[in-house]
Image (cartoon, rainbow, N blue to C red; front, side, top):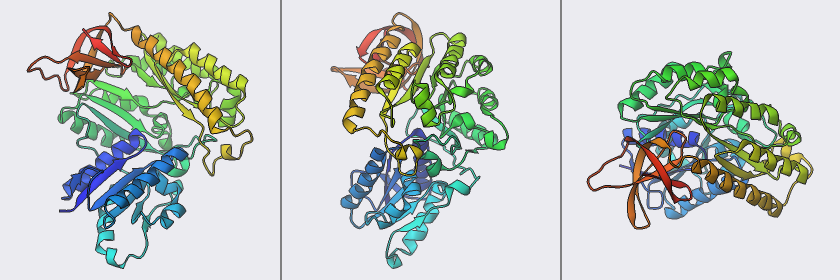
Length: 439
């Protein structure tokens, strides 16, 4: 029995795909072992969203080679798709598999192993992702997380933001068939999972390759599946959040009041240079629709600082806009120059020092707003889905999340098992800065 060590880099889509690949390997008789020890085969599911992601992908591949020079090292995914020339020259990599071939991992791997003695250089199996309309069907039966399952519903993106390489790594929008999604979720529910998270590269485009957005229709069908108690949405395009959309999802109590609306900048001029398809007022209106139909929804976002040519005034516009929205959480990214994108050729590229300075300003703002949002739940009754035990300050706690994705702890009692249990109670205060206490 050959041993396989897997490592994932990047987004929840990558995590889902890695879970399915691991599941397939186990079904075919491979033994899964930790990545930091000896293995016959190392598989790295790579990411290319930033230069740092590229570097981490290379580092993990070279680390695998050092762990066992005789092992087969397999690079999979986005870094492979956009960096074929680099991968082909990398002595650490034996086998490279692009996107839309992950479902065929075992077959490709076994074909390589059968002819390994004759292979004089790395073998690449990469399709032209930009000219396929085929959705790569993968089905998850179980996942490493035992309370929450990520469900991939689409792949690809047609937006072509000026800074982003993802359309070149993932191709155009390809939507999964609704029947296959429903069947997967029914199976997940049968395994005892109570929460699902719909994920994809651009889930707001779900169904657009078939003539129109089908996300609401899909949600209505998933809402009827017995055993599923929570449906959480991945990142949404602000333009999808119309008054009708907000009203209809609010009528589905299983849909969590937690919405990630990608922003990237609070300056209209920067948004235009980024080729984003909305302005700040349209974004603000989307948040207002959500707040009209939900009491205090958790709204989270992504922001890029140091985009080429971002003036001090434009940065201050972004800071002011973030304060206006009052986000629960923000992910702050320093602009990363990506070869082949329009932004890479723009004037006004910033130093890392200046990008770090601006990032620090917004990260402090994020800390303040996040604390303020959490504080608003003190004294309120919430329902928590508990996931695991952790020891904090010498005491054992059960840790879980509310539907808003607020992390909550409750002191563990002898003989008590709250794993995958939904428990109601009042928030009494903070255990840590990002962990609240259930009284």
